[in-house]
Image (tube, rainbow, N blue to C red; front, side, top):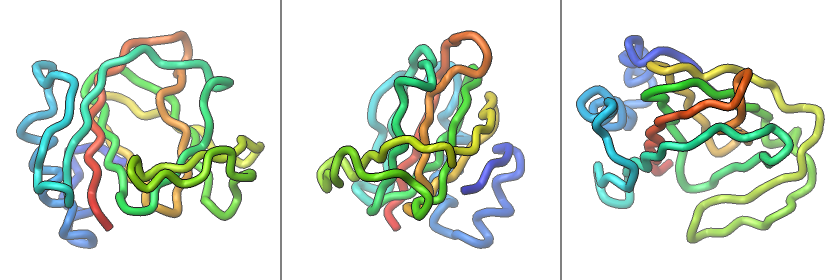
Length: 152
């Protein structure tokens, strides 16, 4: 898991060159005018999912993980708490892997580490990173988020 500001994105493209297109999309398009929906960047190799929503209570979240894609979760506006857990520390699987949606869910345990994601910042979750996004950071709030899915 990586957490940083979009202003410092270049340090990560040196290590993971495939992220260059993801950051180019975020720099060029991730602003208040970006409407919810799916945006093609490089076909099924890379695309963005944009959403606007109210944050949720931690009790309604479950750890999730992916196998085919890594997530670059970028907050355009708002703030939220995300809980991160190394996949080897997750609880039992509650929803088996769905290959079409590239997602599986786990029972929550006490291993989740919370952090705040604020506007202008991103978190990168690799397939070995279980995460519970979209949670309140203080009182409930409105969030505008772009998630770039990058095939690994």
